[in-house]
Image 1 (tube, one colour):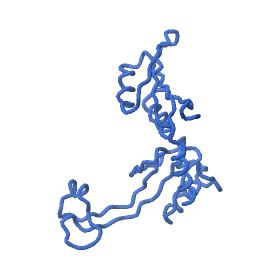
Image 2: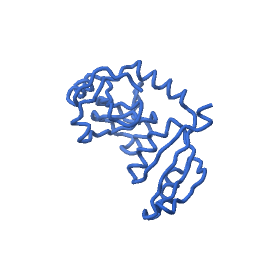
Image 3: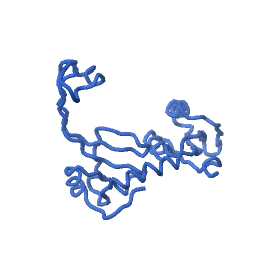
Length: 195
């Protein structure tokens, strides 16, 4: 989704992050993903009468109304679904890869526009082996906000195929997350999306 210019090591990417740039990897499965280094942030307490920014009520709930915020720098990731995930940690693969690239502001804006265009639906199929305890229930619970459109059992291969309708923009991320749970998932373009 982003224009890849020149590839670099994690060390080179880290130097760019420290300069306030965004970076991504070609090896990541999701489209539109990048990481950024969020700088330290100090704010007066929620109870402060000073004008300007201060600790919000959500944070004060955990640190106290009279406690100033002293947030240390951290990495955050923009996920394939466009969500902001604080606390990103590099895997061994991330550290050793040479496929890092700079993500430009224009690329982020173009990715956001493309995501809006790709807001159709797709059919997601999750394959649940019979030997997975409560596998179907786990899948139904994880995908509870998406319409379950049916299922069929493949007796010869001792597995069940469960079908859901999901936003096309969520499909890549769902396949990754279901894979992390031990399930094979795949999707195909639906008639509605193709129209």
